[in-house]
Length: 199
Image (cartoon, rainbow, N blue to C red; front, side):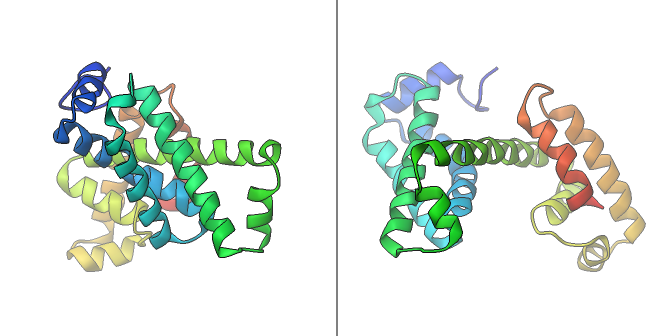
């Protein structure tokens, strides 16, 4: 199955190699949020993470002819974001425990970073699935999942009843479970996040 709605994986890679801006825009849109989340988890600074990711994505554009497949693109994006984030920490001379753990040694940092990559990919899969839900259901689920709002707050903001929010919430959870790949991390992440984010 293609990772993008407009092109197959092979077409997207070929177009990027040729310098096609639309192909780059699709890759940018597809990975931007996940990479920002990944970087922010490392450096604990959302705005700096956004700057780092934008720079990494534009480095991808400048090296567009070097990538043979989407796996190579994905590896470049995550490795570059990781390195740039750790460089940022080093430059800022962060001395807290989080910094010490990340900078201690490759053996100690590879597993936490790998876990963050998997977590970010799971969140990206859920975010894409949220976009595919019916309009009202998608809006309510995003307000709960992405904005962390309570059912009463959503009801007040949208001018609907709390029972409608709960009904749409349950409907959305059921649809997400159907849409997320059973073999992917997204469905596992949804199960762990449901109680914390949707109750």
